[in-house]
Length: 559
Image (cartoon, rainbow, N blue to C red; front, side, top):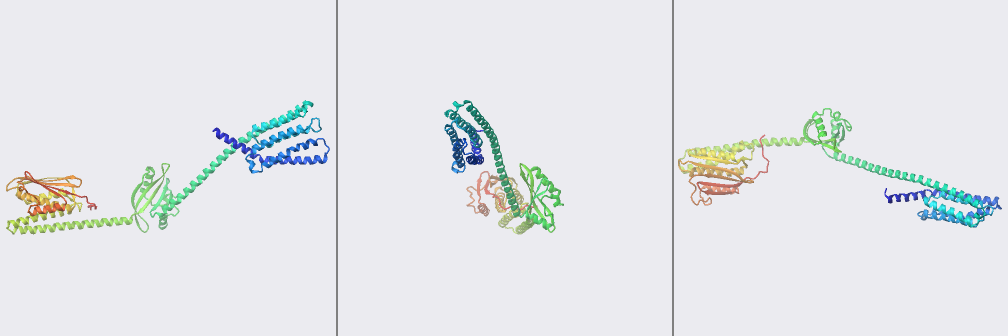
């Protein structure tokens, strides 16, 4: 124990020891004063001429000290200084012993009463006053010394030393007994005080723990009520089960549905199989799985009630305590309306898809009719220039019709696979000029583009390939045309159409060309916000840069 703490405890003990003796001190002193007064009255009345009365009334000098002792115990101001006041009063008792003995004579009748009175004073001192043990020893020794000194001073010892020694022996015996009793009393009270303090500390701690427990229980009850209020405010059906699959929580939405469906109303504490006799084995297995793994489980389930079918999203959430799953919270959200909307969306999407396919099919067919009409017109006309114009128009229409053909057959109705489209388009152009001994090679990166990008690219490719077939290779000349599509960076692509023919005229510029085909190419490049570079070396090369932006709207996929 800390020395300072031990000192404080002893100080607290002596203060407690002193104050606890006040009631018995008052009673004892009142009783002593009362006996003294009664004895004085009786002696004065019956034995007025007795020789011992002189000494008796001399003993009355102690009464003011006794009254003073009682008085200070009733004054609040003096309570803080009781120990010091009691020491002073008992030292004054020693002085009174000396004064009474000093004014007495051993030869006087009744002197033996003085000896008895000193014994009573010392006995009363040890009996009534709860001072520190060393203070008791010192004050008692002072009173004993006062008797011894006054016995020598008044000549009692020189007159009858044996008698004085006998008296001193008896007084010393009383002093020793009083000292021993005071020591034992203090030890007993010390142990009792320590036990009481320990009990008080334990009691205080128990009160604090009890208060903390009550506060915790109150907080827990409030938390449960708050949790229940929150759960009741949620329109979903919510319940929780413990490890024995007994209901521990049920929100008001599910409780109301139970009443409507005729299920057991008071579910708390009952097993889930009793409340839901037809519950599926899969649901019970899912609950066990959450208890084992501690993971959230989400699935969907359809089931029938009395008056409706429910399509629900079901979440099973573990509730942990001390790192162990103690409950599983099940949340059922009715998705029936949303499911109907989703089914309607799918149905509408399918209808839209059919319509789009039909539109692309009809556009392709209509363009095919236009191509057929142009072909008939071409057969019935011998004008070379008009035949060339009709053939150019027909090829442009074919490139557009081919786009709708790809969209019609594609799984994705708003995206066109550009590589496949360019291969088909180059194949059609090659078949159109089948009399030419020209080979087409392609090296195309796979990418999907929108119709807004595919149509200009198709028309540009059509114009450049057609011009290459027409003008790059004279009659019976073998040649090679390359079509290359590469990703440059991000959404940027480069389309290169190169031939090894006779090349373009020197100083050719697309901006100055009077050709309708080149004019169309220029307009389509601008439409794409792209760039074109023409290289005239060992033939001709058209290098076109364009951007293929990502389409933000969702794709429509075939199911």
